Length: 218
Image (cartoon, rainbow, N blue to C red; front, side, top):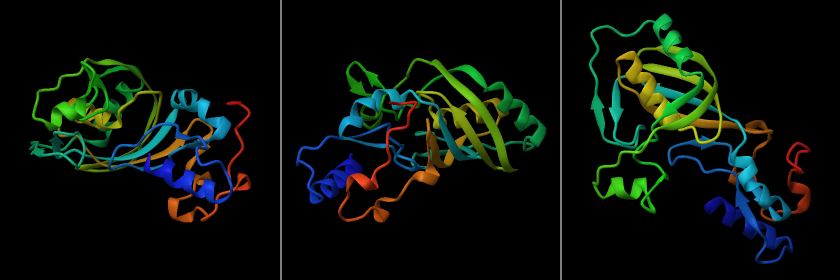
């Protein structure tokens, strides 16, 4: 929402109404980087549709530990292994996660329990156990592996937690599984090569600075 407020302010400086609608097509984890789709004006009703689109991520998994948040932000628990898994073992495990799988969301997530966000309960020290639900993994490509670091490109469907996937891959390998880095590179028809950083946006944002709605979303 911080990004939405920045975009709205730049639009207003260009003459847009002060209450011009600005929304987004899906949040990023606090430690994640990459593509955030911002919707303006008549495009804002597309929010829910864009959130259902397939996404792509680049991620690095640290196989030497688990963490309370399933990423580098949480408290680590080191995992000692007698022998690191081979590349062939990693490939086999990753293949088993492609398709529709059952995934338990991280305790530190925006899922709701009794009307409260799971992360709010977890931060208060309460035990959080979320039910597993089906998610879709379209492809997992190994980019680099040198234990304990595993770099992957992941194509997935709506609602997939890459933090949970990293945790579960580590569990299946008999190692740890903590996300050390995460970057979203695609949401539906939008790719990161089209994106601009907040710093790259002009001070005054006009209609001509915005992308048109792709035909498949119109």
